[in-house]
Image (cartoon, rainbow, N blue to C red; front, side):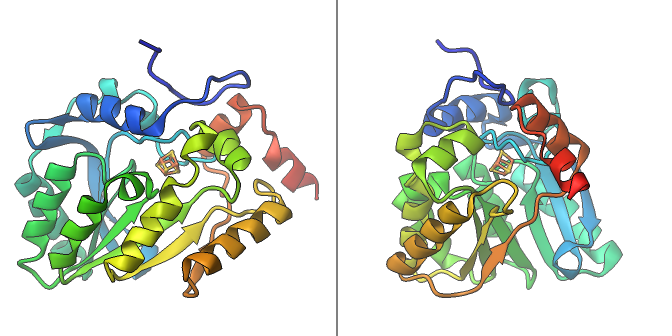
Length: 256
Ligand code: SF4
């Protein structure tokens, strides 16, 4: 078996993101429990109580998540859906914020765990913001249709690329899996779920021509709503991952 993909280096071998999702789930999920690193409230979304989960099925070169993304086996703390829910709500009450989310890694890894957390959130009036890279939603239509029963789930799907080449270069996943997040969008539209698209189209990472292709693809899919265009912030981990992948973009930005 291939070695477990960590951060991208200049001569990395692209991987199958669905296989990486399974391999990562084997590390971070155990009988309905899932690994998390911490729980606290942040100022994004005008205040949100967040649980930081471990592991992802992509290896974005600009990712800000701590090294638990690349070395999930080093994290030791598993939490049940009830423990996650209790911590999210406890922190939300303490800071008086009406929103909850799971971030840090890919929240959709560990379907059973996430759906149980959402079952518990569904008994409250909290809004749950489900952030995702869309890979599993593109592969598993049943996952998307299971979300229909949750009255207070809002999805934010973040695209990483507009072309297969850009996808492989910036996420490390094989270009043949490029369409999965777009299929995820198609599944969200047909399930009539509440969501918006974000995209990491910072011009320092995504060429303008690719940005145009991505926006054309979204229109073709029937998506005309708000597009949240992200800017690559120089977090320590983002800078380190970019440099390991051979990108010295912040040097360029600082000079311009
Ligand atoms: S940016 Fe998101 S999708 Fe990309 S590796 Fe980090 S956590 Fe995963």
